[in-house]
Image 1 (cartoon, rainbow, N blue to C red):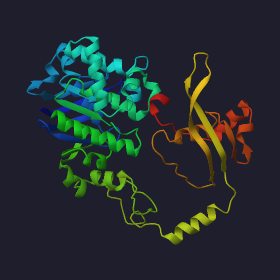
Image 2 (cartoon, rainbow, N blue to C red):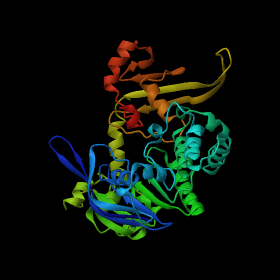
Image 3 (cartoon, one colour):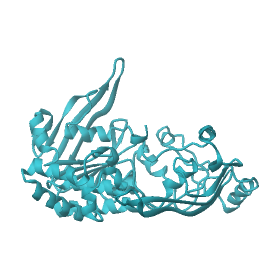
Image 4 (cartoon, rainbow, N blue to C red):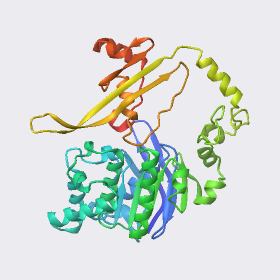
Length: 404
């Protein structure tokens, strides 16, 4: 189905040449599934974009061949590639929030792809979209069809992208980090959905991820990339359970274990340089050590105190702009964070986690409650004072693509 032979891709600037992909070869059979794994910057996405002929202008293919169903893609013209993209070959891009057109309704975006490749009319295309939305398990398909991307959740955006990708029954589906920005429960649903669709359509699947554990749930074979090179490949279960290369061992060992808390997590470079020693990395923190640490932390007054915070968002407005329905994003949330403490806030998509973080920084104004930081009551501060206070309150936003 897909063969890549001795592919090299470089990025050129005025004074440097970076090898993004360094003479790699791989095969994906008809109806098979292959995982492409590696850190950010390892060359995974660049490899996928070369298959789609969507490389950025700065990238140049200096050697290699790419065959799809016996056709050499690198020698195919733009007209041929346009007919293949979205038809025979489809791709779920890494970030649905920036991949969907923000000024076009979700259903119309999928319908446009159907009309382009199947030469059908608007009514039939819309009917197909509704069937696809049901197939990818979107709630309220009619509502999603009419919604703009910013009006639906991240998991729903990803399902719209999947519906668009399978709309024309592709022979090859490339999924580039399709679950990275999603919470664990939605992530599992998307993975299961991709597995079900692969079986139903009999398509080949190239699944790209930085997480070998996620790939082990969906792929039969795996290729591990590091700095543009393939360092290990083979059966997914063999590679996952008995990795040979130090880099693959590092990818697996750097995940925090669920069975206990290590004193320090190893990093991949220590595996690559042979520096890893058993100096606490594999030694779990004892309960006594943990209690002593907490005793020191809780001896101080809290740095952050949240008291009974509430926040509602309007869900529906009347013709005259009055709110008819609201949704409770935060309903009486209280918590404390002490100096040196790490507090985890966990929940499904839409549970209010992000709203809580935004409310603490007053990027979203709470309806009720009190927030104290370093003995200052944040909700009583003027905008100018609050701006100064945010210098001490850092935040890493959920989506770097739309935050930068």
